Image (cartoon, rainbow, N blue to C red; front, side):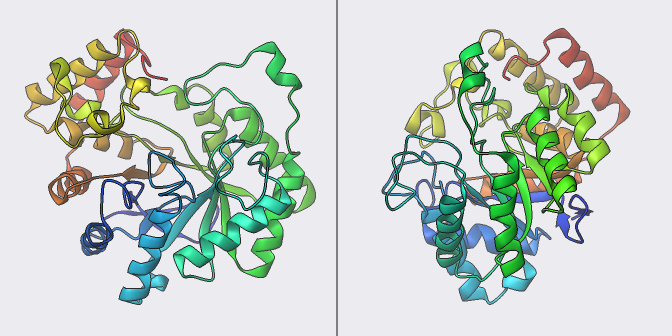
Length: 347
């Protein structure tokens, strides 16, 4: 498994990052442990979780994923072999993440509480990469758009967030920081404040990126390539759509769509046509469609690591095998030709 430098750090992360958000909901603790054991055997050293998980977010499962990852590291005694990333929730009316707040915000008090709770659940005294799951401000994320009134909504200053995180870096609780579901404006404002004030520098950004959502290339690519901010792409399979398993209205038992009906990002106008074109391309080339989608992400020059997730061991093995797929000029030209015909139907 190829290892890549994360941002401007000394961390070398595997090209494949194991996403864990199903642990505690679709996967049991034992199943999560089995997945992590297998991933390590295959050379994966980078795991991603969040205080929000398991998915879908709800009070009774919140934090369960971190606890499962923590119990695995304790049982295996391998904390020093794992590069561990987790996240703090952004602005939210869902307040169950905190002890006593009217709204979740990314401010000093809530950062302090969130970091300590994550450390406890993970049974560790440090987090390698601590990410802001989404902004404190109202921003055009998750395929949404801003309205004029949104620019008047107050948000925590960038420098205040960095100073709060810096306190934990100095304590040794956090090694490095990253962003998630961010915009070019947000990335550059954090970088500007860190350089101006000598505060921790953003090393990564975790945004959705896949064959039917390449919006990262429209602004963020330039920022991140110039500023050495590595992309950690989530949803490389378009929440499963790019495997073809939902084609023609299929609804596999136990799938995320069947269980939760939370896949609207990939059910927009023209999405089905675009998704089917990539599944057809994979069939034409004799390639598993999910592996085509994952390897596409992995071969981008701005990609630090591609986050995969699975609910079965068979799915996990297929996903990890994707990183060995030979990516040819023919495949590159073919996917770009399809993209030109139907750009970003699922932003």
